[in-house]
Length: 231
Image 1: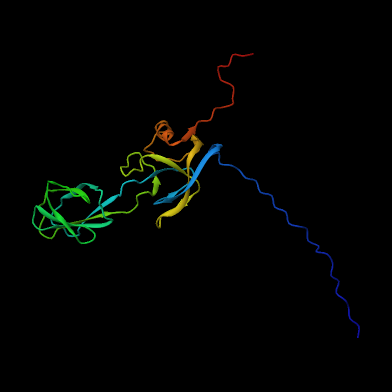
Image 2 (image 1 turned 90 degrees about the vertical axis):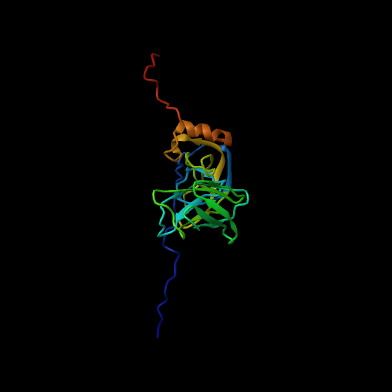
């Protein structure tokens, strides 16, 4: 019996070659003075180049108890130096008095409708509505622990994030909770590539960024002036 040998030769395939070209987005105007740092992005689906602010005050949320008889409101609400994070309970013990209990279950005192309640933890005013409150009515005032996190800078905010102190390095999605991201905290940037809240005008934003070493530059056209009279 004869065997037919199988020929094994060099690989007949050509080596694979790939070429990639990096196309810059022109956000950076001068890369020599860039300073970056990791941050915690608190909320939003944000794109690279978004102007960010840092929350320096714990935000609060007021939720009326379902089924309240009275239709009054709780505002304004500010936090004190000893604030606890979590839900503060306001419970009506009469038509004009609410007990105030902190998240640990400690009663802080009574708040009278129409009179400012002041405490080292929280300050608030309960305002009467057209329909009087009844015993058992209530509110929950939630205080969130997000001091130090970053969000999109909105000029009308009041939690510290109204100050433009950083620019997002890469796209980030914080819809499911805070995520770690990168931010530029100093540098020179192309104003046309910045993404910012409509509460800002570009001139106002450029001025507000400057004290934080974030400089926005506007490009100049290389075209000849339309009134150029040179021969």
